[in-house]
Length: 95
Image 1 (cartoon, rainbow, N blue to C red):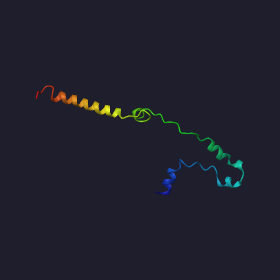
Image 2 (cartoon, rainbow, N blue to C red):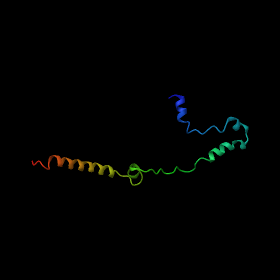
Image 3 (cartoon, helix red, strand yellow):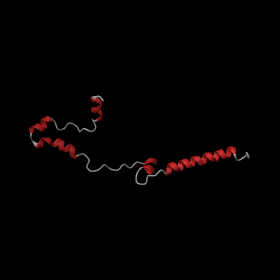
Image 4 (cartoon, helix red, strand yellow):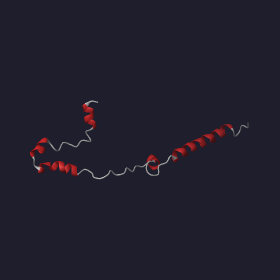
């Protein structure tokens, strides 16, 4: 990987350059207030649970996850196909 590609990908993770070397070498704690202010504004605690809508979130994610919708869809398509096939080939043509 190129260094510029890695730097671009990690750009959102690395905080902005608030603590410059001149602030850190000065020795006074009051000059670090911009850095303290930046980190104090970050959210604390665990990330909130993502609550999205839609079929995937309703049936496949969370504590009530199951494959029942997939099974019912397959059975429904099979039944629909069988009904169409019956109407075409078996209803009016005795064997």
